Length: 181
Length: 181
DNA sequence: TGACAAACGGAGCCGTCACTCCGGATTATC
DNA sequence: GATAATCCGGAGTGACGGCTCCGTTTGTCA
Image (cartoon, rainbow over the protein chains, first blue to last red):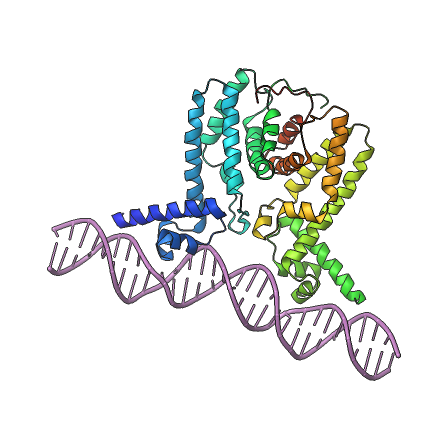
């Protein structure tokens, strides 16, 4: 790859990251190209399809999220580590959903990207969850599957009432009264 | 209004309701027209804009939901009444709004529909919440605002892991240990 | 039953968006 | 500095969606 090509690829990716975070996946490829100071043709040379570009962007931001999350493993309180990750996720995805109608036409869903994305996120989640459960501060009858669902849900909750996130987290704490059912 | 006109309006509304529930607001006006056995012109004569049609559909399904919900006021256990409403909502919005993130794309916001459309849902929610709180089985430090956020969140949670809805509901129960924070 | 307003249908307009194509510019190599 | 490989820009293409316009049909009422 020629050096200018690599540079342009990076510029496109950066612009896409900025614009998508700002106004959702609805941004047109042309806008991204313009923001990157590049022609449309260049965008499609580096990313065969818009979906590929968006997917790349999500993977990148997901990787960054997971990397930051790994630092939480050093916290003394394992439940607080888990909850901090969930709170961060809620904040992030509430920002991302801000203007981001799902691009059903392109088959791109933010939720999916968050859910499946890298296998590293489930791993991190599983680790944090297991540790908190071992410490006895998070209810033991919760799996990674449900935790992931709650993470996504928290993102939507945060958009409407930030405090709702704490209510969801409270439901995860050990010792709650599971009365009937 | 001529009788055939009224009939056609109803047919369009019904078709839109079915198609939107099935595949989201992304359906084209032409598809709706075809499903209703009507020309596109007819659709736009009865609903000045696609947004108006979608909004009407949303209002209708919301009204139906609220009506069904009112019956819950007769249940003996006020918390179970509230929780049943939330579970129903989760089921509905996870199925119906499969692609409902696209509401934003169409310039239509759930918030708006909830707020302007019918003030009845917040009212119903408030009533159910107040009764359950009075009975002491739902934590008292929760407002309608947060409850609404949780309702929306539960819809997304149900899509990924149905049991996650119960976890959210558990967080609403009174008597949970609010350890730190 | 005739006459007329009201409603219908759907071809077509306009705008947008993802994606292609190719002449020209840029970079690497010797 | 010449040559070839590579990359660039952006006008153009095709598809699609919302919406309009108007010739045709239908319901209504005297």
